[in-house]
Image (tube, rainbow, N blue to C red; front, top):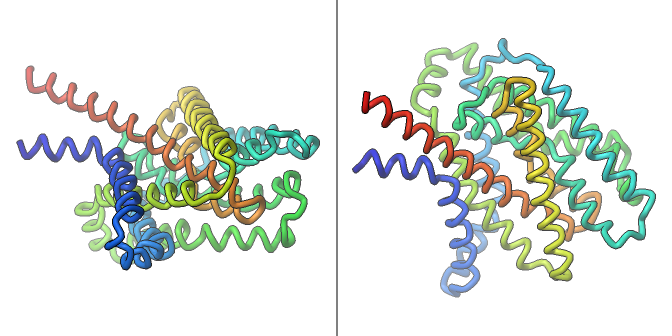
Length: 328
């Protein structure tokens, strides 16, 4: 019985996290006695989420040997593919500024240009993917995004403030603490404290995944708050949500197809589909308008539905394999 309960929570961690996020939001929205706690919740995205992400990536990077990290062919192919997709949206948007679908195109562009999510390697590891190659791609993708975003967005919005170098350094300031710092910390632990490093790998192997489940509660709650509190045309909000859904399906689908070709199906799919939505939301606010942030906010929901479905399928396969082995 205990094993069944543990297996249930392992398989349904992300769906339970999403449902808890919805529940927590509506609790704070409709129960007045919880109002004093809102100040604590409002600080979740500033302090709690970054802390969880740092610990989550640190424990994941501890399992990665930096000496085995190499640029793969699919890394280059997916970066070039991302650039082509972004230009395919940005160039028409530039030449047809009065298009009624301009806002929707901008929402799609924000989701397309966003780099790989910092937790992609965590999910890929649970799915049986190669954490080392995906960690390499995550770092490369975020560094490339720091160049790509200030280069492409002036095509879409001519009022983008600041020079290229200012915007490049600003993006690096968002990327460095939550991506590069835990990587360097894990590398230093491996090199200078190997015994402690071995203990972290041994006892904290699954910690990153469960921290991601808890972080998802906060992310979903903040997403709902952003969408519900926005005072824009519901029709526009719906179109932005749908654009996020279409881009999510496109990126996971094309990533899986490319992964089949390059024999890295799981890592390539997660690398192209799971996005750094926090950076995407910041990009929407910085270069466009707050309403555009609805697309990447909804992308959080769509990508975690995909992740939940993948983990459910993986759990079913593992359970069937285990039953077959026992029957033998």
